[in-house]
Image 1 (cartoon, rainbow, N blue to C red):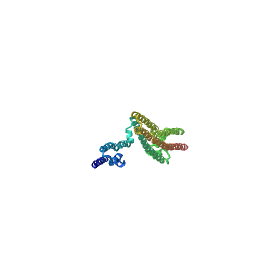
Image 2 (cartoon, one colour):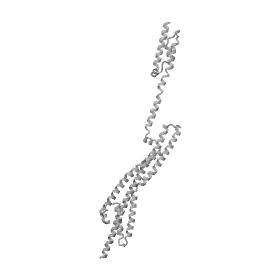
Image 3 (cartoon, one colour):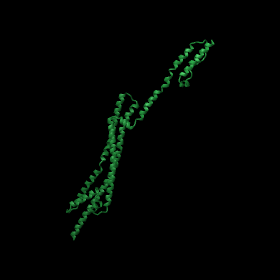
Length: 316
């Protein structure tokens, strides 16, 4: 009787040990021993029932398969996060441009070309206005102490400029009006020639300003057209995919808004540069008017001097 009780206890202990080894480590550390295990560990009070031995394997086989799914459950969540993270990192302006629609790409390229033209005009006009203003100021200083048109031409030399054009027009009018009794007509005709030269110089110095005005006024609307087209394609894609997940919707909307951003980048500098050149051009045209007045004064002196010599000869 004692031998059978000892054998039953030994079999229960072996089955309990096998069940303990089959369970994962996390289940051993967190969950307390089950009631079936406690009952199996207690020695039988009455007769040695042989049914206790097969009950332990049944409990162990019932609990053993349930343990692995608990440990493998977090794995899909990690794979999903690892799949979403690289896609979010690749959402850069270049990637958005490459994945945009053909029409949106054309809008972006056109706006980038407009921005390039804006900065090209800015550099070219800055150099042109700076050189022209410097030369005209230097020429005005050279003729400040001259007494006649011929002396002013000799002071300037063979250099071509707007002041040289004024002096040449004044000399041509004086030569063509030689022998006339009235000087008022000569001055009027010379002033008309000076006005034509001023208008021609204003047209020449304003070349490129219209490009800046056009870019500054139309670039935001061109970018808005690209945005509307891109958002329309995004909504079409949403309807096809039948999902409103932000991770699916956001890239298309970001590509569309990139067109508006490029439009603003092209328009804002164009407007600022246009206003800057308007002020600088106005200052340069004031210098041109000063040169016109200087040439008119020299012509008036030559006419008075010639009439004075004629009167002195008549008196003799």
